[in-house]
Every structure is written in C-alpha cells, then in structure tokens.
Length: 523
Image (tube, rainbow, N blue to C red; front, side, top):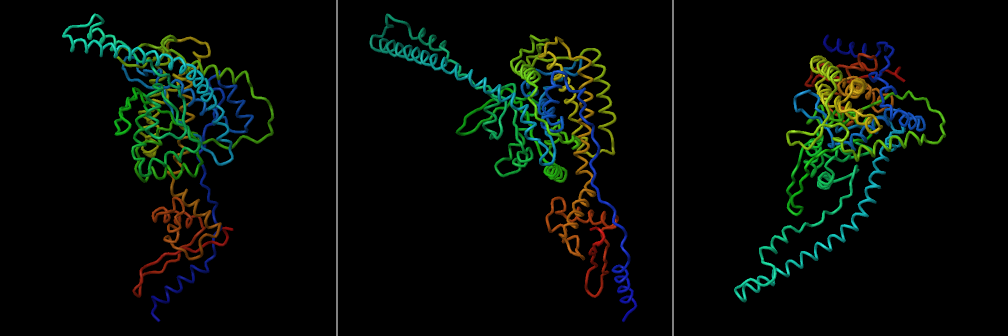
C-alpha cells in the first residue's frame, strides 16, 4: 500500500473523528429601522392613524403609508411642485407604496381602512353619474332629433336644386351645413374613478383617459402583480407602469379592433402589501436578472418591527378624526388648486404648481446636496439601493407638497410650501431610507441569507451527512437554486462550525470531490 494512500486514509479518519466545535448561532438579522414618530405625521391625520393602529394592534406605519398613497391619488396630476426657484422642473406628487410584514400582522385590514375613503368617493361619484346620465339621455334624444331634422331639410334642399335647378324657398344647403356643424353632441358623463384592483392594460388606459388626475392600482399582494409582468402576453405591462410613474406623460394607443385611445395624462399610483420572503425573491430576481428600475420606484416601502405588544382593544372608532380626514380627502379630490395658491403655468403646461418658500428652499437645497454628494456617491452602498435612493429627488418635494395641501384642505392658507412641511418631508425621507436599507440588505447580504436558509434545512433534516453542493442547489430552495449561492452558504456554515468538509483528492481516474459532514450538535 503506497504512502500516499495511507496518508489519504489517515486524513479521512481525522476528519471523521476530530471533535466538533460548538456551532455558532446563525442569525440573518434585519437592519434596524426608524420607528414612525407620530410627531412627523401631519397633524390633521395623526389622531385617525393612531386610532386605527391601536384598535387593530398593528404598526402605525401600515395605516400611515396607505393614507399617504390615498392623498397622492386624489391630488395626482391635479397639481405639482417646482423644486427649483427658476427652473421649470416639475414634480407630480405621484407615489407608489408597499408595506411588508409576515402573515398575520394585520396588513390587509389596516391598509383597507384608508382605502375606504376612495371607495366612498367612487360611490358618491357613481350616484352623480347615474343622475347625470338621465339628463344626458334626454339631451341626446334632442340632439338626435335636431340632427335628423336638419339632414331631412338638406335632402329636400338638394332635391329641389337637382329638380328645378334653383334653390328652394327654405334654408340654403350652405346654411343647413353650418347648422349641422354647429350642432354639438352632448358629452356622456363619466364615472369618476379613483382606484382599481386587477385591470388589463387596455382598460387601465381607458380609465386614465377618463381620469386625467390619475388612478390607483391597489393589489393586496403586490408581488403577484409585478410577477405577472413577466408572463407571456404581458410584456408591455411593465413599460406601461413605468411610463405612468412620473404622472405627467401622455400616451396614445392604436389597436386594431379597439381604435385609438389617448390619455392626455397618464398618472398611475400603485400600492399593495407583501410578505418578506416574496419580496426577497422578487428583489433577488431583479438584482440577478433584468433590472429596469420598477421596484425602486416603490418609494414608500416600509418593513417595520413587530414591537407593538398585543392587547385586547374594543372601542368605537374615533369618528371625529375619521370625519376630519374624510373631509380633507374629498376637498382635495375636488380642489381647484389655483384658487388655493397654486401658480398657473405660463408655458402651456396643464399643471398648476407650487414653489417652496424662501426658508423652505434653503432646507431643500441643503438636503439635495447631501443626497447627491454623499448618499448617491457612497461606494459602499449596493447599486440597487443607490437607484432606489435616487428616486428620493422627487419623493422629498412630493411629500412636502402633499403635507402642504393637507394643511390647506384643513383650513390653512399659503401660496408656497412652508418651512415646516419641508422639514417634515426631510424627516419622512430619513425614516423611509432606513426601511429601504433594511429591505435591500435582505438581498445584498446574500451569502448570510443563503446560509440562514440552509441552516433551516439542516435543522429540518432535509440533507443527509455527506451531501454535496450539487445536492443543495438541485433542491431548488429559493435562492439556493444555483451553484454559486449554494457554495457560499456551505462556506458560511463551515466557518460557523455547522459543517465540515470531507475532501477526496483526485486520483485513480476520479476527480477531486468535496462533501459535507453535519455537526450533530446543531440540534
């Protein structure tokens, strides 16, 4: 027996009987996040948001984010802000949002509460449309009768000319033609919509054409909607949503069978909920696949801690605060912003706009310089998070404008966005940034996340002693479905004392192989 063979057997025996270390605890800890301080919530909304959160035993973040998206929806493209003093750069306060939490955290019930304000507006609008339709049908009948009468007279006039070679004693064909051209068909009343749940792109464009201020697409499980964009036949859906995010673009669609549909203004709001693992899978695909910046546009993205202790709460809703919020939402939906201090555009733009006050302008410029020169230039920050933070250029002024409009609808008057509301917007952006860093860290620290998942599988006895990296990625366990990530997970668990490599060097026509022994102490 050769010495090489003896050495190899001795090494294998040493690996087999060498004492195992105590395995380290594998924790894929989330980054810390800022709590949503009630003080930075606009005062007119503070009582309602805290009341709903307390009665539902859920984080106030869920209710607050949903309500901000509701405000963004009713304002939509009705008003914008020019963050620079002279430049004509316009920001439409169109916001996309998503709340993240494990199942059972009351995500759906809590966000559905603010959504009911939009439902009430739609019910009221439907009643108004039904009444207007009655008048429309009457006017349409009158219009059709006049049109037929003029056409009949035109026929008689033309016959007389053909028969007698002279004009009749009645109205001339030219005059009848003018009467017909001046006859205006009554405009059919449109049901003013504020939200929809599962529209096709074709129907969504029709709704956008009928509602130029914009419309909200609300999906309880938001990742389900985003994943649909990757299905066959939905290739253009993603591009449509990307175009609708800025809130100020027009879109003309020409389709055989459907004709031409033009939305003078395409403003799409987006909101939903999701679970951490589903968001993780989507972000992982975005980083390692085609990243078109769609998920980075979800600026109101929050993943709060589960720190709210459960307690039995059984009390009536705070009707006074709820009525106050409902009135603000309705007033914003109907508001003529020019009458409340907005500037009319002088460059043929359809969007009235606000500017910052002098003191507010200084705060904005300081904040923007910090964003551009520090946060967006940080080489230690993952590119996908940099892309997300770059969207804060429009987020901060959008929030400041919405806070100002909430104050205006609540009875305060101002023709500029005030220093207080800009400072409040800065606080909100800092709060949202901490949540964005938590969310994106789930995928940017991929090795530890993969190790955490593999450790769970080991505790569940999903792998046997002597498994290989190939055995791991063939299981198709979420992010462990490829060789690179599976190998990284094994390396992390070796370092943590969970696994030990068993190496068989190449020889006798065989390749070098590496398998893994499992530390029995992990259980």
